[in-house]
Each structure stands twice: as structure tokens, then as C-alpha cells.
Amino acid sequence: MSHQAGSETTKSTAAKRLLAPGDGLRQWWDGLGRPQKWLFGIVGFGLLALLPLYPPPWVATTGISLGGTMAQFVMIAIIAIGLNVVVGQAGLLDLGYVGFYAVGAYTVALLTSPDSPWNKMGATGFFSKDWAWLSCVPIAMAVTALAGLILGTPTLRLRGDYLAIVTLGFGEIIRLLADNLSDVTNGSRGLNQIAYPRVGESERLPNGVFSAGNSSGDANYGTWWFWLGLLLMIGILLLVGNLERSRVGRAWVAIREDEDAAEVMGVNTFRFKLWAFVIGAGIGGLSGALYAGQVQYVAPTNFNIINSMLFLAAVVLGGQGNKLGVIFGAFVIVYLPNRLLGVHLFGINLGDLKYLFFGLALVVLMIFRPQGLFPVRQQLLAYASSAKKLLSKADDSKAAA
Image (cartoon, rainbow, N blue to C red; front, side):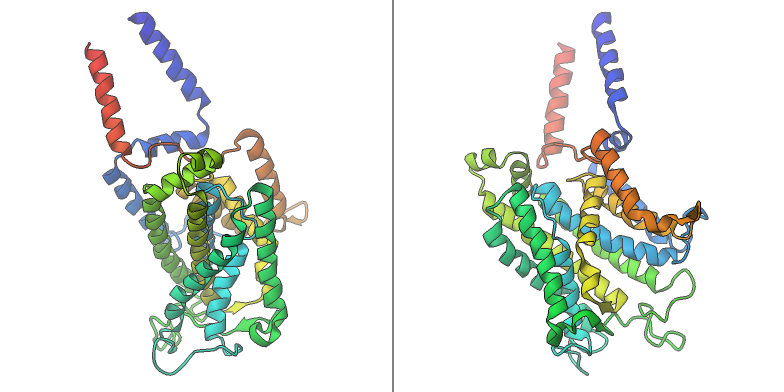
């Protein structure tokens, strides 16, 4: 008995030594029950929502308000969640995800900008000044999902590098179309005065709290966009979480691990890959709609291949397949450059070296932690709690015997 206890202690000690920084936090989270996770989630997101109002001194950013930084973060986080469905869950390497982001942004811009020939802004109805942006959000998601369907149907029979090249080309095609269809998209000059939510109008803020005129104080327009994006992000997390625990999520994991084996076992791999592509595209369109409303201006240069690489870097840094991990990766991608902006070392503005930092971080991560900072834990996504109870009962019966 003593020898067995000693061997178990040695094994547990060795296991602890092998834990990376993200593993301990992940295992603690996995050990919580569902009600506890909900409680910690509500408290965590509540504290996150209060961060722009009560920022610690060491968190504040220079050159841009913390609310504006957090508004950028929540947009990239939504993109990372959508891209994680495609790359992390289904294992499809998408290098042109910025194309879906652009489709969502341009859908809102084309329907609401006075520079667009398709402007539907009217005095009454759903496209009135007060309701135009909100009416365009589901349209942008639907159009982007349709774009994902059109792109995915002929291309998802490809795999690996071939699929990556096709998606890369798609992102560049969307940017070039936006740049060259001058009669529709206004070309390189872009589309201006895009609609945004008209909420909280007053004498001090005649255009509401979401307008650029609300630029003073901690509760500025960036903070309001952050709060709106946070609510949308929570809804997306609930949707994607339910999908992960469903038959669709289990099919995605099987395809990611071994597509041939999944197909042999009866999984319709093409259909489930198309599901992932369409859902990821729709989520990207939502983020594009957020971007268009917040900035109120879109131009082709905002949707280049570099942004697509940054979106992928957020997923890789955080941990492919882990929703909360990719949110952390998005925070690093957005917050680090804004925090270093204006910080000089040897006469160099560190904020201008963000691509160097991200490149070095990815190289180091691929060497020492290729699965990301917070890798996903492989488990039975459905009936996981029941399986754990059965296993614990079996262990107890063995110990009693």
C-alpha cells in the first residue's frame, strides 16, 4: 500500500511539473461545475465591463482612451471566435477571413452611407436614421454567411495548403473588388457617414452616446461600443458553446483530428465543414458591422492581408479550439500595441514594432507551446458530467473492494 501511494505521489508530482502556465488555469476551470462556471462568468464579464470606467493606472493606454481600446478588442474577439470555429474546431486553415469581415462592413456601408448608390436610409421604416444600423446587422450577417456558402461549396473539397491558398485569394479578391468598383463602393476614397445606433440623444449629445461627439470622459463612445460588442460577444459564445456540445461540434472535432477516419465512420465531412465555414463567416460579418458603425467609414485599405494574419495570430496565441483562449489572444493583439504606443526605447516608438513582437511571440510559442497558451482539453463534449460520475463511482467501488 505504501509503495502504491508513493508511486501515485511521484506521478502527480511529475504531472504538476509538466503543467504549463495555462494548463493550471484550464484544469481549475474544467474542474468547476456548470453553475460555478456561470457564476464566475457573470462576475468576470461584469468586471470586464467596468474596466473602462475604473481603469487601474498600469492598464491605461496613451494616445487612445481605454474605452476605445476595449472597443477594438471586442471586435477582434468576435472575429477570433468566428475564426476559431473554422480553424480551431473544424481544422480548416483560412487565411482570408478578413474577406468576410469586409463583406459585413461594406454591407452596412452600402445600405446606409450617402456616398453609396444603394443607400436605403429613409425618413421612416427600418432604415430610418434611428433604426438603420440595427436593421443592417442581421442583413450583414446573412450576406456574409451567403458569401461563406458560395465560397465554401466549391472549395471545401480541398485540404491543407490548397484550401489556405484559395481562402487567401478570396480575401484579396474582396479587397480588390472594393477598390475597383468605384461606381458602387466609391473606390479607394471609401464610404463615409455610415449609420450607427441613435441612443441617448440629449442637448449635450445631440447624436447620442454612440456618436464620435461623445469623446470626453470614461463613458465615451468607445466605451459604449465596447459594452454593445460585449453583449454580442456573450451571445456568440453561448451559441458556439451549444454547438460544441452538440452533434455538430463532435463532428467538427472528428474532422479536425482525422478527416479520413471521420468519413469512414459515417460523418458527412463536407456538410459539417460547410456548416463551420458558413457560421464562421456570419460571425465575421457581425464584427464587420460593428466596425462600420463605430468608425463610420470603410475603405479597401482597412481589409488587407496583414489584418487577416493578425486574426489568425489571435487564435494561435490563445489556443486553437478554446473560445476563452482566443479571446485572450485577441486582447493581446489589440492591447499590446496600444499600450506600447508612445513608449520609446533608444529613440524607437515600441508601438510601431507590433509586427516584430507578434512574429517573435509566434516563433517562441511554436517552439515551446505549439498548442497555444490555453489549449483546448479533449473531452466528451456531450454527457461529460455523466461520464465523470460513472468513472468516479467505478473508482470508489474499486477502492472499497
